[in-house]
Length: 163
Image (cartoon, rainbow, N blue to C red; front, side, top):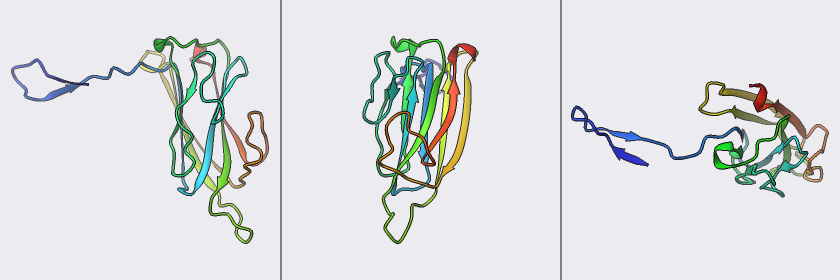
């Protein structure tokens, strides 16, 4: 929201956000526009937010499944919004689902990813982490949570209580 500034000395505007602060957020972007890379966040109760299960029982949510483009895909959990923040570890993973330009004669291209993790946003214990990596193998048949192999990367394990 934009509010007029209440000051005689300035004709400027003041911008105030009414968006709730997140307790945990993870934002995934990647380097190839013709690729599908997915964000998975597994909570301490072993429930995973991912493109086939975008909202968890405690309030965690994946905002969009970006299947073409450079992202972003975002996971959010906010105690300020009334979500339940469970004690324990939240595991953030990335999966290379598909290189849309791959053919029989041309293998999947390597994709670079970047994940920005914010814990306890707007508090004295706020922490930001930037994680980057490369995945060189895609596999749309290996997309379920708990999958493993060269098409997967575990990016971070986050415990908001220990931050």
